[in-house]
Structure formats: C-alpha cells, structure tokens
Image (cartoon, rainbow, N blue to C red; front, side, top):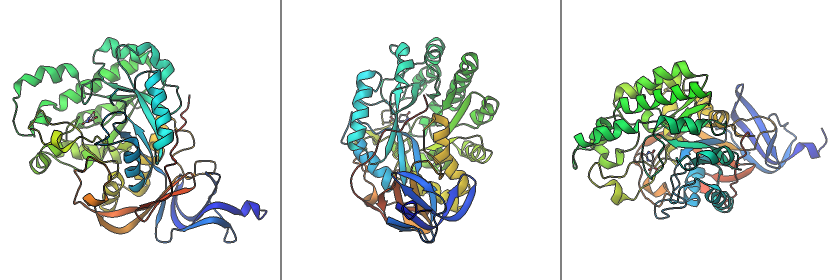
Length: 444
Ligand code: DOR
C-alpha cells in the first residue's frame, strides 16, 4: 500500500467494533466521508485520531421516528434543536414526520423542508411526506423526491389534521407509488365511537382505555388486508399490542414493524400515576402484558426498527386535564442512553440494538450508504462507553420544550462520540464544529 493509501481523514483506533458479521477489535479508517478500511495497519496516519480503547464503535445510529415541529412551533422544537439533541444523544440520522404546521404534503412544502434541512441540521435526515385524501395522485411522485424516506399515513387521528381513515382511500394511497408506506395504525372509527363514553377530567390512565388494544389491532388488520390485496409493502409504526405482534408474524412478506423505546420502558398503570399527562401518547403506553410482548417480539426478530416518536409539546399543553392534554413524548436525545441501559440489564444484545437502530432503518426505507460499518458506507459512527453510568439530567437536554419522561433515570451505558461522515460532531458531551447534516438518499 502506498503511504497516501495509509493516510486517512479520521482513524478510530482500538475500539470493539460492531461489524455486520459480528464484534471485532479493529481500526477503522475514513476518507472523504466514507469508510475505506476496517483494518488500518499500525503504520497508518490520519488528520485526526480517535482513541476508542475501552469503547464500543457502532455504525451511526438512526432514530427513524421524530416530530421536529419545523415548520411550526419553534418554542418547543426546530430541526436545528432536535438534531442537536440527536447528535448529543449519539445519533447520526433522524427521519422526521410530516404533521407540522403547515404539513409536508406537496411539492412546495417538500422543497422547503429539503432546503431547511441543508441549512440547519446537525445530523443527516430523511423525512416523510404526509398522505391526505387530496394528494393521493401526487404521492407516486412525491415519494421519490430527494430526502423522502416514505409516505406516512395517519389511519387514526393524532396531533395535527393528517388523516386517511377509510379502506377505499388507504387502498388508493397504496396504489399510488411503490415504496414502503409507514402507517400510524389505530382504527379511527373505533376511536370516535368510544370517545363519548369518557368525560373530561378523568384520570390520565383512561387514555389507554379509550385507545384500547382493539383500536390498534383492528387498524393493523385492515392495513394488512390492503397490503396483501395491493402487494404494497407497509411499515407499522409504534406497534404496541401483544395481538399485533402475534398477528404480524404471518405478514413478514408485506410488512415490517417498529417498536418505540417508550413501549419497551414505561408500564401502565404506574406510568400514568407518576407522570400524569407526561405519559400520554398515541398509541398509548399499555400494561405489562404488552410490554412483555414487545420485548419478546424484539428478541424473536419480529421487529425491524426502534424509534423514539420524539413529539415535543409545551408544558402547558401536557399539563391540561385528560383528554385535552397534548399526546406525545420527547425522546430523540434519550433514545440511545435508555436503550443502552436495557442492553446492560440483559434485555437485548448490543448487536441486536445496532440492527434495530442502524441496519434496520436503512433496510426498511432503503437508505443508501447508511447503517453498517463496512467499506464504501458513510463514515457514520456512534462510540459508546458501556462502563459509564450517567443520569438523564434536565440540564443536558436541549429541546426548547424543556421536559423528558425519562428525566432522572440512571443509565448504564452512554454515547461518548458521534461521527458524521468522518466529522467528529460530538465528543464527551460537547458538540464540535457546525451543523453539517445532509439529506439522505433513498433507493428509488
Ligand atoms: O403521541 C403522539 N404524538 N403520537 C403521534 O402519532 C403524533 C405525535 C405528535 O406529533 O405529537
């Protein structure tokens, strides 16, 4: 090898690397933003060397489910603040939801989002285009625009006004375009039918009684029937019930699924008693039976991605009595520490976590050059210290909304560096340089 071939922009030495083939102690070389070797020799040199002794080196991790509220409400979040939190929390990419104000549903809003990401994001980004009954014909074109990871369908109503609830319209969405569609799967008719049985000011736990298992399960059965009928691949976001995990086993040919860190961590009814409105989200936090089913599905290989569903709201909106309190919990910055703590507790392996947070999102949405420590892939790395114990403190959180349902939680395992295409964006809890995030390319 010539000496030029042995010189890199960044060398990461002595780390335990989670490669696609397993764990190995090796040295990674990055040049021009791309991984060029997984076995740099001792004689190699670099502009910058990171010593990863005692650390694990993971492929850059992705949160495929965030609501960064941009455009919309800068007092709770923006792309700039949300991606800053992502990088501090050890993530190199996020995929942003379309229920902003205005929503991302047409060429004009897609273009705005593309430009804004290029100017303000600290990590790489994909984003979803929202389906409406009025834009169905345009979705086949919109899903191919740069940076678009998927069309998102709210089949049940949540924050914002995006909603496509009836079978005929959902089928028409599935017949417009061909890439995998991401679904918020709760049956809108059942939600509306059950709503009058509940009154204002009832305890927050009623959130999970109103939006019960059957709301989610019925929604998923309807979507699976249409996916089979049309052959269009579907991704069930935030799968939350034992019934859905069991049912989806028979639909692996047409469906992938996501589970949220919240459904793997918070258990009802205790979460509603301790957190009140700060436990309210859609689909709801549920009881231990569903929590255990979610972990079983993760470990049986039936789940493809883990997300945070980071959904900031003002404190005042979270503290309103049920059901007027806003639904949604923050989590982009805490996703990895909380999941590393689950690894330390023996609930899943680090290799499985990497599959769910790196290779999984890339595979589900077709992200090019992302999700693996392999030659030719982007030089995105997340360095974690599994020996480090750290508490999630309010002072560490950057989201302007100012709260986290995980505040005070002690985590065993912590991200200590984030490398974005060869640039060290975070080290030891401090951001480095400037916002250099880009749009991710997805398979056509
Ligand atoms: O709890 C939720 N909040 N679920 C969603 O589907 C949307 C999100 C939000 O945007 O607030």
